Image (cartoon, rainbow, N blue to C red):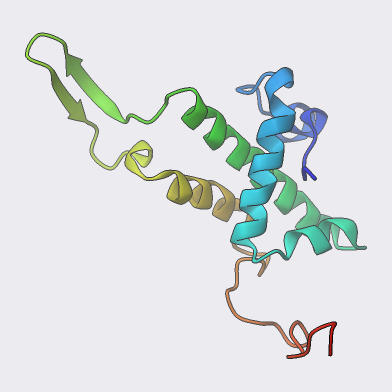
Length: 136
């Protein structure tokens, strides 16, 4: 399940980098990344009666990650400042986000929206984990 629609991406998030024909697949992949980064808390939040601000943060994070994945899928790995062909020489821009790996770029994009929600907290909230399984 994707946490954001193309309409949300263009109308609310203000995105324009991704074509409508490409968005659904990217949004599903981006939602999977958001699940990973939130320790699978996002799905429960999106489907429950949750404060609108948290749902909005998840949707915006999904759009941001979708744009990162779109850039990566289209060969934007670089951060290249200059490149020569004869004798092949490449100079990379210092401090470029594009020099980061895929996971780090996705996490950075999502973090901007999710950091204040508590969803990226790697511990357990009170009552979140009981120590039992459904099979017990």
